[in-house]
Image (cartoon, rainbow, N blue to C red; front, top):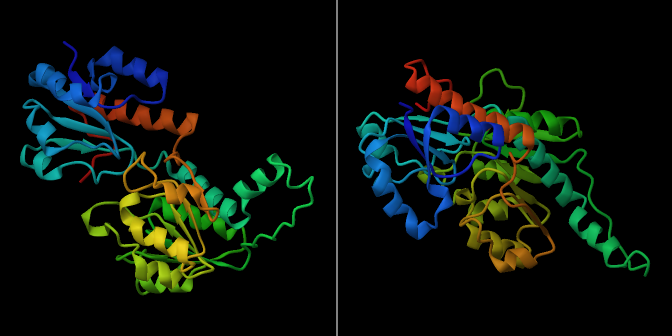
Length: 316
């Protein structure tokens, strides 16, 4: 018999979804409304041995408790802060995610957001579309990034990939994370606050979770300063959104370019109205190639687990 799995979110690759159906007996919770899902899980939960979920969705302790036969949680994404590890560890439930395969596309979007903010691309697009160019409306110059300092908070795979790209634009680089990166030519700041103070652009690439919640606070934003720009492609929880709104409104911070938010998909209306902000809807890894590779890694981890083979990308 095929192992039964519960799918909390679809994978954005039809070939991968076809593989799920081929190898597993799938229960698709995502096809139901939020109000209907718990009853559905109760109806199938006794037989479910695996879960497919996303980084932002994860799995709660309550839902782990509803799945007494659960053996593995396969996260389609690199974020694991929404997984209730206190519940999974106690039952030796294995957890996997999809690191590595999305590094390049996430890094590409981080650089795109930085450049879009620096060169004011959304505003320039509107300038042409609404006829201001034809009307000879005065246009303020943008800023060059060459010679500016890019501070990277979180210097793992994605942070280092961003640094590699920004070096090609002639930017100066520095980073901060609690641990020192061995054999690294990029300078490490003494603290996050020191990193912000030294940076023209602060790029947030650190993991989410309780340890980093609201670590980008009013003090850090003030240190980044009225000419500074915050770029976040990590998790919305790292940024104190109220402090960010205040800093952007009163000029304490110059600009922001954001792919992630505190309570997605709810983006504060004041943030949407600001001309010094670039917004994208949590799409850093949303390319055909990367979403297929992520989904394939989910399937391959599930197949390895149920075949009794080592997992490809286990979460410690």
